[in-house]
Length: 309
Image (cartoon, rainbow, N blue to C red):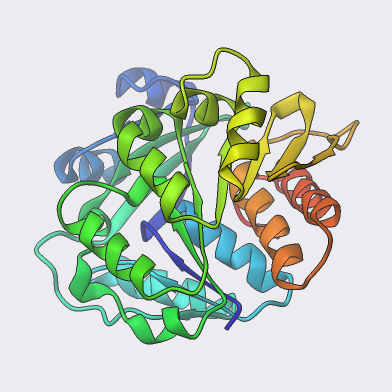
């Protein structure tokens, strides 16, 4: 197998709403809010579900890799409930091997309620459920050992059980790539993430804000200097400034695609990672990897949702 992902197994539940629904439920448009199970059920009770998708950041990347023709797998914790079944089915439909034996958990399967208003904006309410409770016993090391690359997400990394799951997966991997995921994640786990980047990861994906926060950089030149000394592959997306990959003294840049009809930015980073990793495992040049990442992210932001139709 080319790549196996380990991440939050979250079912995206997509519903169309009007602006009044957001106002009445004190939700701020275009943001993501963490909610408990009671609030999640209350919100969902008055809505019609348009679609359910097997989501989560790394899962989105893994599906993108599958769509590009790579053999891939995913490990993520769900409960043996209706949504857990839908999660597994959704991955299988995308030709992703799912390495997790679901059983009845105290918490239900993690869910993200995606509320789409008439202006195409997405407002998200996430109930992590059992996804955030993954532990070392949930990790099947055989597919990890048989994969070229293990791909991790910063969202899942936390003290306690998830950290043990992470460590077990890393110890049994051939190569490790990780996305820093989110500025909030970086600031919360800065010393741990820095240790991972310096000592355990072969490839790090980050956006400009995340990497600058991680190393407390005042400007982007400091990031380049840090990366050169690191001597590992660091891949950074820079918004309008395109993307850059740095390994040792080799610095490769790629511009953005112009004149796109942007509909929804969800999944841009996930699909960029899919394109880049596709090039990487198929022995393309770093420049071609960046171009493939840019192509994939450009496609996904011109449609609704974090999966390519």
